[in-house]
Length: 269
Image (cartoon, helix red, strand yellow):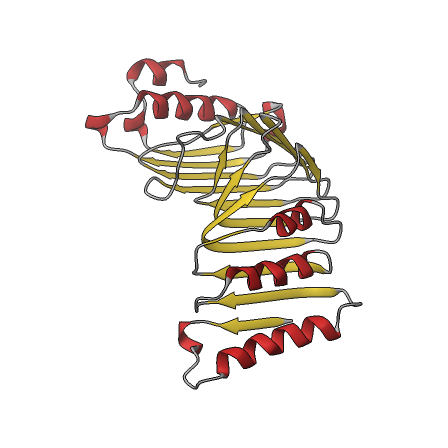
C-alpha cells in the first residue's frame, strides 16, 4: 500500500489536501484489524506532524515493510518511538527524512524479524538512564545510514550475526557530533561489504567485536579532507577503522592525506 504526495503532485484545488488526509485515515480505519505486507508514504507538502506520527505509530505495529519519505522537519512522538523499537513484525524499514529526531526509549531493543534497515537524516538521542545502546538484529543483512547521528551516549552496539552489508555516509554539514556517541561496534559473522564515505571528518570510532569475521569482506573507505587542515581526531578514527579491517578480502582507501606518515607506517601490511 502506497500514499504519494510530493511537490510534483501538489494540491491545486481547495479541499484536495483534506480529501487526501481523509482517504489515509479511512484506509487505516477500515483495515485496522489487518496487517500489511508493505506500506509506503511519500510526503513533499507540509503537514501537521502529529498526523504523520499518528499514521506511523499505527503502521509500525501492522506492517512488515515500511518506507517513509518526507521533506519536512519532524520529531517522532513518544508513541511512534515506542512502536518502532517494540516492533515484532518489521522485516524492512526505509526512513528517508530531511531531519527527523527520534528519542530511543530503552537501553536494549531486539528486532527479531528485521532484514534490511536504511536510514537517512535521523537524529537519535539515547535513553537518559544509560550511556550504552544495544540493538539486536538476529536476521539483519543490510544496514545503511546517510547523515544519521547517535547522541548522548558512550557506545552503540549493533549485534547482527547475519550482517552482510554496511554502508555509512556522512556529510559534515549535516552531521552534529558535539555530543555524539564516540564508538559504534559491529558484530557480524558474515560481513561481505563495508563502505564508508565521509566529507571532511569521521564522526565515530567504528569497531568490530571480532575483526576475524571480516576476512571475506570488501572494504571501501573514502574520507575527503583538506591536507593543509588535517584533523587529529579524524586521523585517529581513520587509523582505527583501517586497523579493524586488517583481515579482509580487499581494501580501497581514498583519503591518504588524512593520515600522517607515522600512522601510515603503523598500518598492517
